[in-house]
Length: 253
Image (cartoon, rainbow, N blue to C red; front, side, top):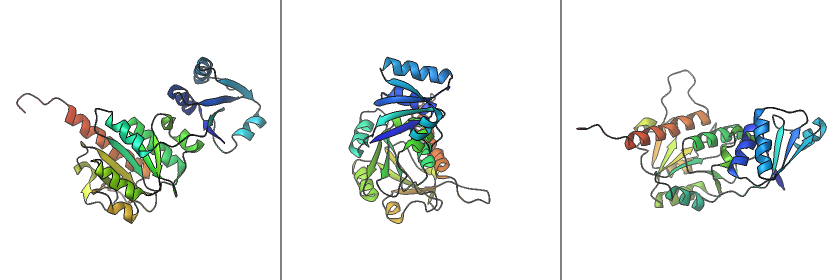
């Protein structure tokens, strides 16, 4: 069984990441500088690039916006939590994990993975069930970040959070009724940030396994943010605090 990576940026990122691509298919007549970059990279990696008629192309990728390019890859194996923790341990920075509790929209999932990669997270953890899959739409929404950031799937998020605590991670959930504003939480230690479902938020059992519940203050009539936007705000608060902690202190401070 094969997976597809669609869109110019995601395909280029897959090539840069060394993803095992079986072949690349272009819609006849598609041109552009990024297409030239992709075909050159494919040639260096000895990956076949074929052109297809519009009908042939639609038969391959009928349900997604492709920008005229599709990479066919072998079905990916999800990472494990142990692999993600090992990746974090090998870094000089404190561990930083994103845990997503039943995110159902593949575009939100892709956007969150993209932000996590940009913010320097070490990995993303999802439940195996009741979550959007890492499919072509997710990969495209992530702009190829799925090819650089490991994503693990687990059967029981609550149990996994306890395992993270044993590994000396603080678990911070994000909810509109949190006891602390998100800027009041210390993110300079190893952190697992939990973002909940678009409509229901974090499930009760998952919430009970968090060390802190943080909220984002809202001042308009709409009393909720999109999950990917809320996650992005907190992820870059993690970045801000860690950069501030690493900055040299002025003499005499």
